[in-house]
Image 1 (tube, rainbow, N blue to C red):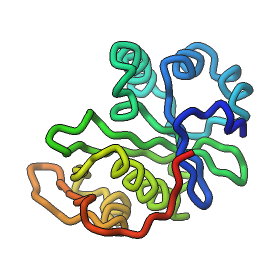
Image 2: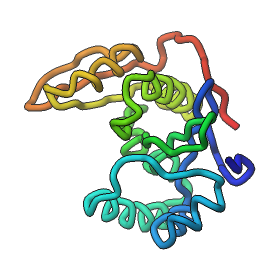
Image 3: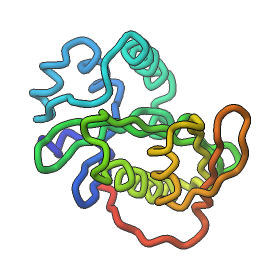
Image 4: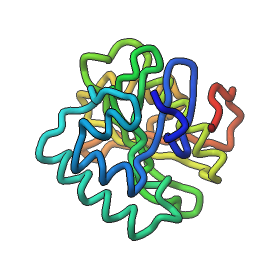
Length: 182
């Protein structure tokens, strides 16, 4: 893994989270093998189906249009330190409004059940707190019990149901810091 190239990376016990920038996302979108060589990683994340590839192409344009705030809406790739495999991603969905934003995440199902997403989300929330975020929202489908359990383990509380289940985490409450921003 080439950490020196991973601008604004977040490191935790077993993972490194690093964000797409305009440059590295352009490379990912145009030449995945070259991206993997440049960063010393292997992509094993969420399936690169039409929806995800369309989203990543849109994201490339959004990052270019607002480079100052890109950390609030770019995807952070989740990389396993032991194997240099990208296994998922996590993101804030928009810059905070009055200190509030929303988080989203995804993991290749082959890597679920190992606590990776709980570790990634905990580190990501600590990072968000350093950016001035006060409250983080998340939504899950009613049948997505794995995601609900991740949120509960990370201190989210159930907020409401509107077809989806909504959760909230107050980052102003004290929590142990388990990550460091590199």
